[in-house]
Length: 71
Length: 339
Image (cartoon, rainbow over all chains, first blue to last red; front, side, top):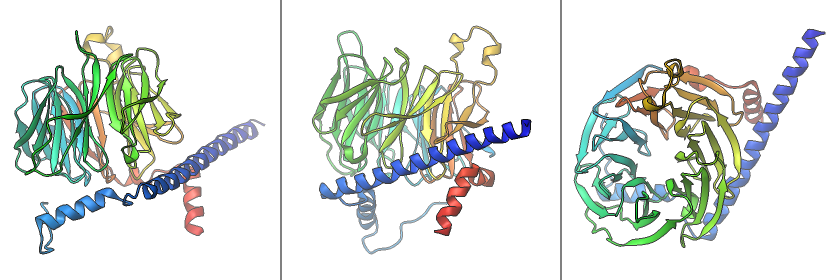
C-alpha cells in the first residue's frame, strides 16, 4: 500500500514536470514565431549580429583572409 | 568542474561579462580598473585604466570591438577593446550604475544614480561600433524615474523595450524609442531592490535577482513572471545558461549584515536551479564572501562568478553537467529525435 502511495506521488510529480516542460516549449515556439514575424515586418535581417560580424571581418581582412585566432 | 581563480583585482568585483564568442571575460571592480581575461585559461590579457572611482558596470558590443563602462566617477567611458584606449567619456551629475548595449550595438543605455537634487535616470546614447569614429556627445533620450530609482536596466529584443528594475522591487517596461512608461509591476517584495537583470539569448525574457532572496524569470513582452527561484540569502546576481535549461544565482549576506557566525555558513555559493522546474539542483562553493556577480558563457562552455572577496572564478562545465537531464527531458528528447 505504501509503495503504491509513493509511486502515485511520483507519477504526479512526473506528470507535473511533463506539463511544465510542454508549456515552456509551447511558449518558446510561439515567441520565436512572433519575434521572427516582427523582425520581418520591420524589414530587419534575421540575425543582425551575423551581419555586423561579416562587416567587421571584411574590414579586418578585405582579401577574405582568416582573422588570426589567438589560442 | 575545476575552477580557475583569477586574482588581479584588489577590491570587490561589481560586474563580469563574457563577450559573445565566450573567449573573453571582462571584469570590473571597486578598484577602478577594468580587466580582460582569456576565458579558457584565466590568463589576463590586459587592463583598461582611466576611471577615477569604483566601476559599477561594464558591457561589450556584440562584435567585441568596443567596451562600455560606468563608474562612481560619474562617467560612462567607451574603450577600444584591442588597444585599451579610452575612446569617449560622457559626464553625468551622478554615478553610473549600469550600462548595456542593445542587440546590434548601436545604442547604449546608462542608469544614473539618485542623489540630493538629482532623480535617478536612464539615459540612451547613440554609439558607433568603430574605434575611429567620432562618438556623439548628446544623449538621445532620458527617462526620469520619479517613483523609484532604477538599479538595473536593459534592452529587450528588437530594442523594442527598455526594461528597468527598481529599488522598490518593481520592474518597468518603457518604449525603447520614446521612453514612455508602458507598465510598472511589483514583482519582488516591496522595497527589496533588484540587484540584477540578465537576458535570455534572444532577449525575449530575463531573470531578475533581488534582496528578497528570490530570482524570477520574466517575459519582456508583458512582464509576466513565469518562474520563481527561492533561495535562503539575499541575491546579488542571476544568469540564464545557454545550452542547458538552468539558471545560476549568486548572493550572500554582506559581512556587516551578518549577526551570527552560523548565518555565514554555506551562503557564499553559486546556486544552480532548473530553469523550467524551479528546483535547486546544485551548488558551487569557493568564494570567501558574497557573490556580487555571475555570468554564463554565451557558448555554454563555462560560467564565472565575481565576489566581494576580490576574486573571479571561472568554471568550465564537465561531461556530467551536459549529461544531466530529468527523466521527462530525456523522454522529450527521445520523442523529438524519433520524429
